[in-house]
Amino acid sequence: MMASGIQLVIFDWAGTTIDFGSLAPVRAFVELFRREDVAVTTAQARVPMGMHKKDHIREMLRISDVAARWQAAKGSPWTEADVDRLYHAVAPIQLDTIRQSAELVPGLLPVIENLRQSGLKIGGTTGYFVAAAQLVLEQAKTQGFIPDCSVNGDEVPKGRPAPWMVYRVMQQLNVYPPSAVLKVGDTLLDIEEGLNAGVWSVGVCDSSSECGYSLDEWQQLTGSQRDAAIAHAREKFLAAKAHAVIDSIHELPALVKSINERIARGEKP
Image (tube, rainbow, N blue to C red; front, top):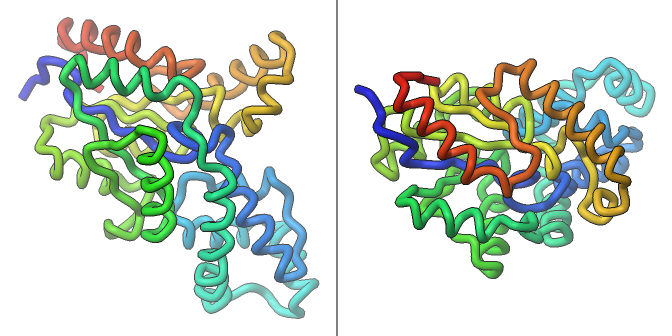
């Protein structure tokens, strides 16, 4: 079945539509490990960004430096029991950090309005657990962003990079085939998720975890510093086989038109 054009745009949450720089997850994991007397860097906390949070904890513990610090602090290597305990412990921390970083990415609402005026449906996917995902959705609603549906990692058999969240959104919104869907996100796992689902997979740079700046920090950068950060993120997204990369969410409506032209020429994701 050939798509006539993009019918559905699926957004990631933190770092794409809300929480510029994806700070809430980073702050939560740094604090979680601090409470265990294990110091981790923000860079280490970002390595698994986009995963379901239990998988995120496990991948952090697999980082050699973090594993060594854990063993030094605890006297033994980490276990799956530790992963389970940390996953339950991170929940209240994560909810607090979400409340501190809940502003929509600048320019999102006009983009959503443009897409809706073009007849597109809007979905969301996130690696957050149920309570965190609900809180993010509530915070977004108070600012005027209400997607047609949103799916979190607890609602599917496996989170990113598996395609199940994307498929769940497609099913709920009755959109098919995958070539009629565009997934936009700010992590390499977002790109991989989209590719595995067979949809158009797009990376966004400025607000991304790959850049990793808060909005205030971003605004204080010089033009050349911003350009360098975007170029670095773009290179990583393209290396991950993204179908397209945008500097900012503002560029998404124009990209949708461009991809529709590619579809009209017979291209598929």
